[in-house]
Structures are given as structure tokens and as C-alpha cells.
Image (cartoon, rainbow, N blue to C red; front, side, top):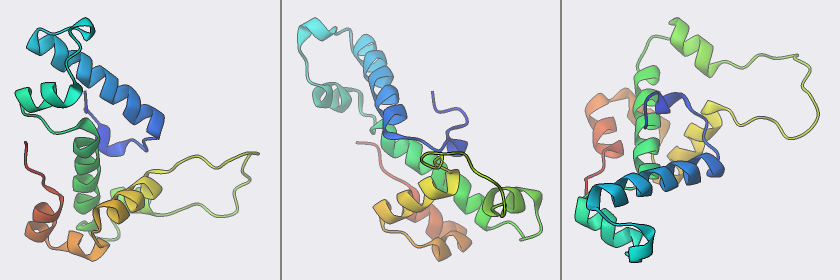
Length: 131
């Protein structure tokens, strides 16, 4: 379900849809239906998986660390981290970009960008243990 998730700029709506799909699969895996009225926390604890939102953030931050460790002249780095100036935008709210979602994740997890340059420290910072 998270194939290519490191490149998605996710909105709350996307995360909610992923949560719903994950809980459907976990309920099916445990043999429960919604009519059984078993709480999500109980099912998640029984199966022993972390919430999909945290896994999504972890994938995105892992990819960010990979990009940060590349040389500045690499196409991956120049294509992702540079913004194009003097482009006429349409009306309304600007689209959510990947780097804005990464900055939000870094702020939520209280991690600085400089840690990404040290691979072992970065892995320790972004890895989570399964419950």
C-alpha cells in the first residue's frame, strides 16, 4: 500500500483514506467485521503493526535523508530541492509540495535537517519500533 509513498505530498484526506484501507485489511486479517464492534486499537495491538501514518512519514524521511546525502549537482537533488521562480501561478491556494510535507514531518518529529548527513544517526532518528 505504501509503494512510492516517499514521493507523495500527503494531505489529511489521503492519510485518512490510507487509515481506513489499512483497518479494513487488519480486520479481515483478524477475522472481525465492523459489526463485531472491536476497537481499532485492540486489532492493531493484536496484529502488532504501527499506524500507517507513522510508516508513511518514515518512508518520506528516509527518502529525504537519501537525497540530502547526494552531491549538490545530482539531478535528483536539483529536481527536488530547487524551486522555479517567475512562474505565473493560478488562483487559489498553492498546491502542497513534497518539500513542505517533509518540513512538516521534520517539525512534528523534532528532527533537524543536518542529522540527515550522518546516515547512522539519521536511521536512529527516523526508525520506529513496531508495537
